[in-house]
Every structure is written in structure tokens, then in C-alpha cells.
Length: 332
Image (cartoon, rainbow, N blue to C red; front, top):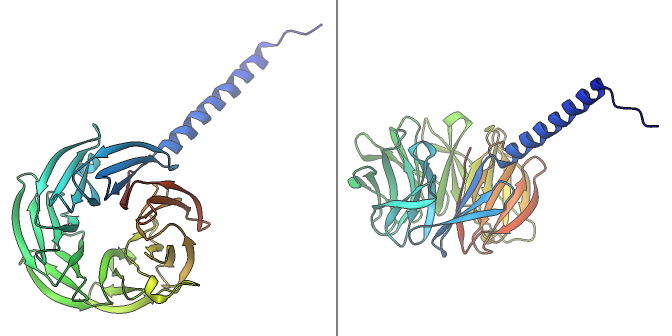
């Protein structure tokens, strides 16, 4: 005959069950943290993914969306639309384009002032860096640059902007107070994008036609080192570094090697290339999951996004990401 269960046993079982449910819920919540946004140049959309790479939605925006940043304290996405000559404003709560800010002809990349009120945009056709007030949508000033300006970075104190000129092969140092170029830093061929590293002491610059990254001392504004890349089986001319992202702990820089179809993991302190990971075609844009464990890479010519396990430096999966995916943003 089966004996009845004692009350203490039942209570223990219920506690275990409750803990299991709580753990499952917590695990699900942890997996759900973070949303990945990818701009698609040809689809005129921003595609939305969860952190595992499953597509969850799409946002219609202006034409040829490229560079993106979070605005309004993370409540908006600001996106540069090269064929609309505008910056789109996306409300994340509604998931819709709610406004646009008119810009100059063929805007490329941009940066925000520390207070998020001013946007600094490289205007390729006019060879200027232009500043705009976001709230009023009014242009504030322009600073002349070399041919084909692209990358824009504003220092955390809001006093200095760096702008690359693809034609002049320099980085312009712009004093935002006087609105003038104070120095031109010679780097590699066709410089494209920036990242600050080493606590702001270093400015890393990708040189697309030089298979390299220039490391600039931000105190002296001189190139102090050049990191060169080689990929087995690839010509040097196929190694075209453009996008970069710094790991959340600041120890590693990941560099997209463009037509070489790889991303490189570089140790910030030693400048040594630690790993190279095969991804899709023309790897440029990158972003990290909030926990720093997963790296997302946009592959512009294979129309997909590769997820990489950062600890092992191995690709996890590749998922469709619209036609010509460009920039990746990930919520915290």
C-alpha cells in the first residue's frame, strides 16, 4: 500500500518547484536582455533582433540608413540616411520613425555632443563637418575638411572633434570652441573610422587601403604605432579595415577587415593580433551584447550578420540581416 506523503516532504517539493520556476524565469529574463538593431542600406529599414540573433521586427526609416546612435537617453535611435540627406529619429517605444532632421548632401557618419543636443555630421559632397541643433533642426556651423570626410568622433568633454578625410589621408583635429582645425594628423591610406582606447589616451583609426590601424596619442596628436593585418590566403589589397568596436572591459579591440571577410581581435595593451574569425562578406559594423559575451558583425555584401562568441573567438551562427547591413546598435 502506498504511504501518504508527509507535509514536510510536500513543502520541500513545493520549494524546489518554486525555485526551479524562479530560476527558469530569471534565465529567460537574462537571455531577453538587450535588443540588436541593424540598419539596412538597400531596404531602408532598421531590422530588430533579440540577442540570440532571431529577427523580431523591422522599422521603416528614411532612404539608405547607415550610421546609428542612441539618443534621448536611450529612448531613440538617430540614424543617418545618405540618400534622404537627413537624420531620422526613431522612437523606440513605438518602434516608428517620428521625425527627421535635414542635413547636407550625402551625409556619412556622425557623433553627438555629450549632452545629446548637437549632432556633428560628415557631409561627403560638401567636404565639411557640419553641426546641427537637433531640437530646432537648424544648422549651427560648418568646418571645412579634406576630401570625402567620413568618421566623426567627439571627445567625452565635448571640446574636440576628430574627422577622417579619405582623400587627404589625415585625421582633422577640430576645436569645437573656435570651430577651426587645429591639426592634421597623417595616418594611413583612406582612413575611415575611430575608437578611443586606453582610457582615452589612444585614438584608433582604421586605414581601409593600408590593411592597418593607426594608433594616435591623444595628448601629442601624433601617430605612435601602426597595427598591420595579414590574413592567410588573402592579398593585402583585400584586407580593408573599416569598423571597430571596443570590448566592454576595454581590453580588446575588434576590427572588421572588410573584403577579407574576417574580424580581428587585437589586444589593446600589447597591440598584438590575438585571433581572426571568418565571418560573411565585407565585415564592417560591429556591436557587443550587454554582457560582452557575444559580438555581432554586419556583413554588407552577404546581407547577413554573424554572431561570435568573444571568449573563444568562434562564430556561433550567421543570420539574414537585410540588404547591405551597415551599423549595429545593441541596447544595454
